[in-house]
Amino acid sequence: RTVYVNGDFLPEEDARISVFDRGFLFADGVYEVSTVLEGRLIDNEAHLIRLQRSLDELKMGCPVTKDELVELQKELIRRNNLVEGGLYLQVTRGAADREFGFPRDAKPSLVMFTQVKNLINSPVAEKGLKVISVPDIRWQRRDIKSVGLLAPALAKQAAVDAGADDAWMYEDGFVTEGSSNNAYIITKAGVIVTRHLGNEILHGITRRSVLALAAENNITIEERPFTLEEAADAAEAFVTSATTFVTAVVSLDGKQIGSGKPGPLANRLRQLYIEQALKS
Ligand code: PLP
Image (cartoon, rainbow, N blue to C red):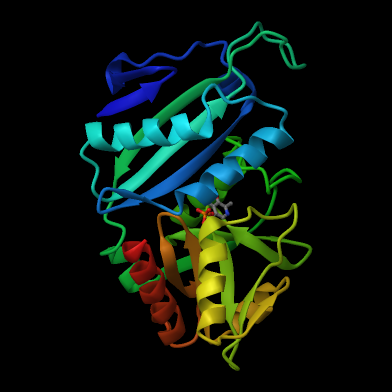
């Protein structure tokens, strides 16, 4: 695999980052994952706008302009012949002697790599996800796509250890989001409920697209917090993210949701999302 590191396209085994890079020492960095379908980036513009927002919130620079970044992304896709999968990119504050305050002269680092994945014909999406609930122990700025991902990694591992696929995190009795996705329920009246935007969740790019598609198809949406009890009692549930699109959730803490199979509305939204992505 060819990766990109600070100006160079290199075989992954030759890529180097300083041990003093603040991404490594402080998780002082941000990232984005864009979907690639048929060799093309999906919704990439929105991902790069969110990247800039994350950078601005952390007063961090980017070593290249947005246009240069897009060219580098496309070049990396070409060099890896990536047809379907994800493109990961990360900007960190760069290398400096270890001090908590921002270094004055550090140069930000930019790293990119690709991951081959079957996104459309995903076996997990066909079966639906079993999720468990875990307390949300993350920091209070989850709207920033920070590389500090230990809490979601622990959440996901707790799910795997429990024989489930993923974890839904909750705070004050309300679901915030999944370990790496936004969380939704569909009520028995057919209303989509998902938490409103704020500092408590990541503002998902897929969330935005899927809610727009739902609105176009006259499906009612309520952006508000929902409880675990409400989720357990829902007709359907699902998650969204760049690399999972819309994926149904079929059980919560061992109790089946609805029929215990991916529900009709979740399936329809997945179909609509994929059709739109392939056309874009
Ligand atoms: N929420 C969290 C915590 C995430 O990590 C992600 C994606 O990685 C999402 C939501 C979904 O965001 P997007 O649709 O932009 O991939």
